[in-house]
Length: 202
Image 1 (cartoon, one colour):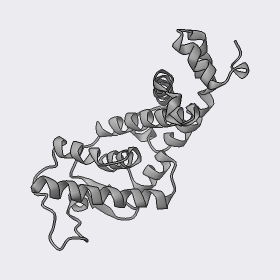
Image 2 (image 1 turned 90 degrees about the vertical axis):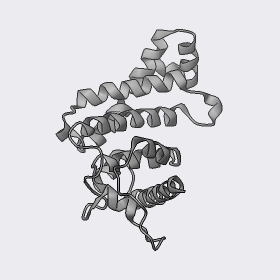
Image 3 (image 1 turned 60 degrees about the horizontal axis):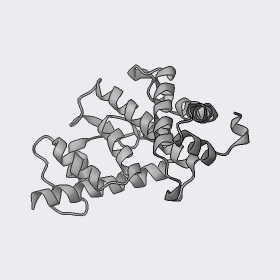
């Protein structure tokens, strides 16, 4: 079977019929995409013990997930869904690796590549409120999960990367977004963090 003779949807239908050759063809077809994403992300995570081969394997896991769970009724192409699954898997892997090297919260993180801002300061930044948002105790996992529930997929990735000491430039690099998109996401995240904390205090 030559993948050039079949489109993605035909190959996926064969996979659903337990055709492993069709799966292997899809994996082979999307290897260049995985390599491209890995190459972009690698420069932001090589110092945390991850090598290209590690990320390639994680990318393949993300691609397999896309193959298994793609639903063409969602009005999205398989390429877009596969790219999203691969990127999510790689970001999660990189975040987990970096977390092992640092404490998860209350350390200095770079928001704009020039200024270090602690997580506490992000939460206490009350430009829209004359009173500081209360954050005297360590942020709990329960609170973090409440925050994540309010975020979009993209904002969640930005939030997790912020929590794990990735710089502004690294976040833009890893997510393949320009400075303005990252800056806007950070502002939305900060606003939702404040709202979540205020609601938890009521």
